[in-house]
Image (cartoon, rainbow, N blue to C red; front, side, top):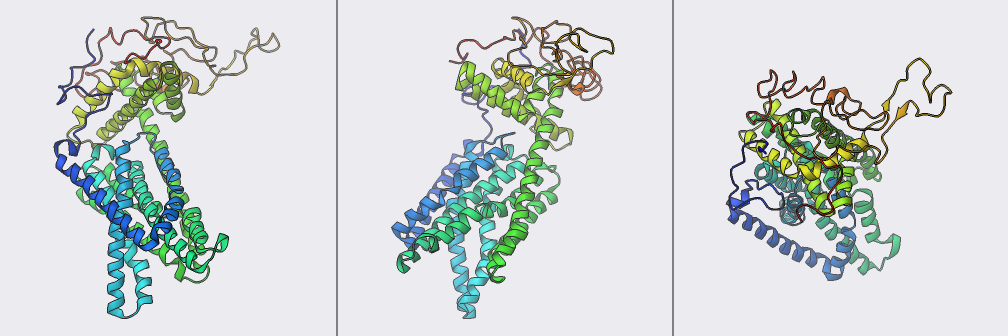
Length: 526
């Protein structure tokens, strides 16, 4: 059996393990930088721990730590949920959180204290220095320190930073780590004040600080820094030759973040109800607007997957049902659950990797079609196709099953003449029929869904060779939209539009071989 394309050059040090792509990570060739970064974050963490404990005391530090940790899992889970279409590696999130909690917090404490003391000495007005430090110095220092994490990921993890959602996630997690450390300091200090005054319960300073910082505004710091992340995300979507745009957009986002942060810090000086006025008039609407923007961007990413992957399905790399399944979060979840139920968690993880690589492939083609792909476009496409092909035997049956379950109901229009089961001639299916779980048997051993193969299917659910579950845009390989490998849309390597694979031949006609109706009893990799 011929391989789907010429084999990739061997990876240095052997084949990839556990199906993980061996990207040219910046630390693999420069371990010194990697070690220096870990050392920097560790030392920053130890210094910030000592500084916070010195200001709050041991008991205050423990109380502040216990209260400050409460919103962290919720915020991290929310940003991880936003990143589900093309999830980035966890190590990026760990770095972002550690940078915010350790390095950025340490920079902010030292710089803010030094600037405030210098202004107080120069002006002989400690009260004015505190106000100026909170409204001007702190926003500039803190947002710049947090933006450094986004910049590092943007520069050294460019493959993982491809759009607005990636910028939002990295910026939000960085700000979550920063707010975590800052909340420990504020809550610990409030607890120490209560210890001196004897206040307890709801009337205590600790309860008021907890309500304002953890209950009312846990999203404040993430909201500010997300504006910087959006600037970097839009810059990532720009072409590599647009240097001015790639510089000005992140700077514009950073300036917006500083401005909103300054407005928030200065709200307490706007009168008795200034804080609540700024919270209701600016913070809540901005939070709602940014949430809508991120969710809309995520839906746009799913639409990109559905629009770009049929080119690979037409050439045989994917099955006709996969673009629909990979463009639906519900179908993705169903595919992982199906694989996990029949083969266990290793198979579910393989399906998740397949989904991630297919999404990266769709985004790569989308950038290439708009002239925004880099010089590594061809090797990257080949690498992603190789990873998909290695997992097809596990992922394809699961995605096919998920596509059948998640497909929308198809309207069946009956003929005008009486038909048995309709118009009073006995019970029959209604005008809408959706496939039921387990109702549609898959192809037999050795078969592959395609035109001309009679395959049993449920009433009201089109044949796999039909118009792709009721949507004519994703027809079969002989459908009207993307056509066969020689069709008019993407065509074969000699087709008039895009050809296929940018120089890579399509899979052999005898491939991909059996398409099992159910999973084997054991995981093939076990």
